[in-house]
Length: 146
Image (cartoon, rainbow, N blue to C red; front, side, top):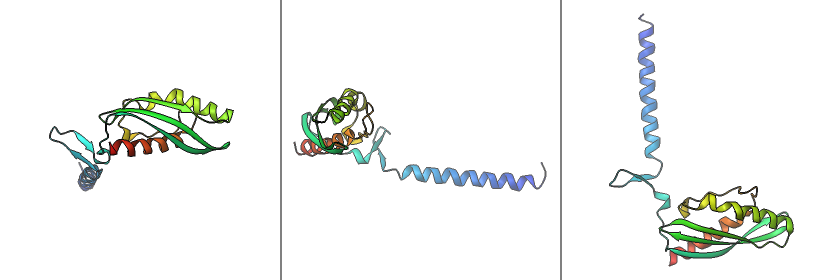
Protein backbone atom coordinates (compact mmCIF):
# COMPACT_ATOMS: atom_id res chain seq x y z
CA UNK A 1 0.00 0.00 0.00
CA UNK A 2 1.31 3.44 -0.85
CA UNK A 3 1.27 6.45 1.42
CA UNK A 4 -1.37 8.19 -0.72
CA UNK A 5 -3.74 5.22 -0.42
CA UNK A 6 -3.60 5.07 3.40
CA UNK A 7 -5.05 8.56 3.98
CA UNK A 8 -7.85 7.78 1.51
CA UNK A 9 -8.73 4.57 3.34
CA UNK A 10 -8.70 6.35 6.68
CA UNK A 11 -10.93 9.10 5.28
CA UNK A 12 -13.35 6.48 3.89
CA UNK A 13 -13.40 4.76 7.28
CA UNK A 14 -14.32 7.98 9.05
CA UNK A 15 -16.96 8.73 6.40
CA UNK A 16 -18.46 5.30 7.00
CA UNK A 17 -18.52 5.90 10.76
CA UNK A 18 -20.22 9.25 10.23
CA UNK A 19 -22.84 7.66 7.98
CA UNK A 20 -23.48 4.87 10.48
CA UNK A 21 -23.87 7.41 13.29
CA UNK A 22 -26.20 9.55 11.18
CA UNK A 23 -28.36 6.56 10.28
CA UNK A 24 -28.52 5.45 13.90
CA UNK A 25 -29.68 8.93 14.83
CA UNK A 26 -32.39 8.82 12.14
CA UNK A 27 -33.79 5.54 13.36
CA UNK A 28 -34.02 6.85 16.90
CA UNK A 29 -36.04 9.86 15.74
CA UNK A 30 -38.87 7.92 14.07
CA UNK A 31 -41.24 8.19 17.00
CA UNK A 32 -41.09 4.48 17.77
CA UNK A 33 -40.51 3.31 21.29
CA UNK A 34 -39.54 -0.12 22.50
CA UNK A 35 -41.52 -2.15 24.99
CA UNK A 36 -40.11 -4.64 27.52
CA UNK A 37 -39.91 -7.40 24.88
CA UNK A 38 -37.75 -5.24 22.62
CA UNK A 39 -40.49 -4.87 19.99
CA UNK A 40 -41.05 -1.44 18.50
CA UNK A 41 -44.38 0.25 18.92
CA UNK A 42 -45.42 3.16 16.73
CA UNK A 43 -46.40 5.91 19.16
CA UNK A 44 -48.83 7.39 16.63
CA UNK A 45 -51.07 4.30 16.85
CA UNK A 46 -51.54 4.38 20.59
CA UNK A 47 -55.28 5.16 20.50
CA UNK A 48 -57.51 2.49 21.93
CA UNK A 49 -60.94 1.75 20.53
CA UNK A 50 -63.78 -0.29 21.96
CA UNK A 51 -64.34 -3.61 20.23
CA UNK A 52 -67.54 -3.75 18.19
CA UNK A 53 -69.14 -3.02 14.87
CA UNK A 54 -69.48 0.60 13.79
CA UNK A 55 -71.20 2.22 10.81
CA UNK A 56 -70.74 5.68 9.33
CA UNK A 57 -71.38 7.48 6.08
CA UNK A 58 -68.44 9.04 4.33
CA UNK A 59 -68.73 12.04 2.02
CA UNK A 60 -66.60 12.91 -0.98
CA UNK A 61 -66.90 14.67 -4.33
CA UNK A 62 -66.80 12.86 -7.65
CA UNK A 63 -67.17 14.31 -11.17
CA UNK A 64 -70.88 13.49 -10.83
CA UNK A 65 -71.08 15.70 -7.72
CA UNK A 66 -71.28 15.01 -3.99
CA UNK A 67 -71.25 11.30 -3.17
CA UNK A 68 -71.59 9.09 -0.11
CA UNK A 69 -70.63 5.58 0.87
CA UNK A 70 -71.70 3.66 3.94
CA UNK A 71 -68.87 1.93 5.79
CA UNK A 72 -69.28 -0.77 8.42
CA UNK A 73 -66.15 -1.78 10.34
CA UNK A 74 -65.76 -4.48 12.96
CA UNK A 75 -62.92 -3.90 15.43
CA UNK A 76 -61.23 -6.30 17.83
CA UNK A 77 -58.21 -4.98 19.72
CA UNK A 78 -57.99 -1.97 17.34
CA UNK A 79 -57.66 -4.40 14.40
CA UNK A 80 -60.15 -4.34 11.52
CA UNK A 81 -61.67 -7.82 11.46
CA UNK A 82 -64.45 -7.06 9.01
CA UNK A 83 -65.44 -4.34 6.58
CA UNK A 84 -68.44 -3.68 4.36
CA UNK A 85 -68.73 -0.71 2.04
CA UNK A 86 -72.19 -0.04 0.61
CA UNK A 87 -72.38 2.14 -2.52
CA UNK A 88 -74.92 4.95 -2.20
CA UNK A 89 -74.38 6.98 -5.38
CA UNK A 90 -77.33 7.51 -7.71
CA UNK A 91 -75.00 8.20 -10.65
CA UNK A 92 -74.32 4.93 -12.51
CA UNK A 93 -70.64 5.68 -13.18
CA UNK A 94 -69.91 6.72 -9.60
CA UNK A 95 -71.89 3.70 -8.32
CA UNK A 96 -69.76 1.44 -10.53
CA UNK A 97 -66.56 2.83 -9.01
CA UNK A 98 -68.02 2.52 -5.51
CA UNK A 99 -68.89 -1.12 -6.23
CA UNK A 100 -65.34 -1.85 -7.44
CA UNK A 101 -64.00 -0.22 -4.28
CA UNK A 102 -66.41 -2.20 -2.08
CA UNK A 103 -65.38 -5.46 -3.75
CA UNK A 104 -61.66 -4.89 -3.06
CA UNK A 105 -61.47 -3.04 0.26
CA UNK A 106 -61.55 -6.11 2.51
CA UNK A 107 -58.25 -7.40 1.15
CA UNK A 108 -56.65 -4.03 1.87
CA UNK A 109 -57.82 -3.29 5.43
CA UNK A 110 -58.79 -6.53 7.16
CA UNK A 111 -56.13 -7.49 9.69
CA UNK A 112 -54.78 -3.93 9.88
CA UNK A 113 -54.73 -1.53 12.85
CA UNK A 114 -57.44 1.08 12.24
CA UNK A 115 -54.93 3.88 12.94
CA UNK A 116 -52.59 2.72 10.18
CA UNK A 117 -55.10 2.40 7.34
CA UNK A 118 -53.74 4.07 4.23
CA UNK A 119 -56.25 3.58 1.45
CA UNK A 120 -55.95 5.31 -1.90
CA UNK A 121 -56.89 3.37 -5.05
CA UNK A 122 -58.88 0.17 -4.59
CA UNK A 123 -60.40 -1.81 -7.45
CA UNK A 124 -59.65 1.02 -9.88
CA UNK A 125 -61.50 3.58 -7.79
CA UNK A 126 -59.46 6.41 -6.32
CA UNK A 127 -62.14 8.93 -5.33
CA UNK A 128 -64.23 6.54 -3.21
CA UNK A 129 -61.27 6.29 -0.81
CA UNK A 130 -62.01 9.87 0.25
CA UNK A 131 -65.45 8.85 1.43
CA UNK A 132 -64.00 5.76 3.07
CA UNK A 133 -61.44 7.85 4.97
CA UNK A 134 -64.15 10.28 6.07
CA UNK A 135 -66.24 7.40 7.42
CA UNK A 136 -63.22 5.85 9.18
CA UNK A 137 -62.54 9.13 11.02
CA UNK A 138 -66.17 9.20 12.20
CA UNK A 139 -65.95 5.55 13.28
CA UNK A 140 -62.71 6.17 15.18
CA UNK A 141 -64.32 9.08 17.04
CA UNK A 142 -67.30 6.94 18.01
CA UNK A 143 -65.20 3.91 18.98
CA UNK A 144 -62.88 6.06 21.11
CA UNK A 145 -65.82 7.36 23.12
CA UNK A 146 -67.15 3.87 23.88
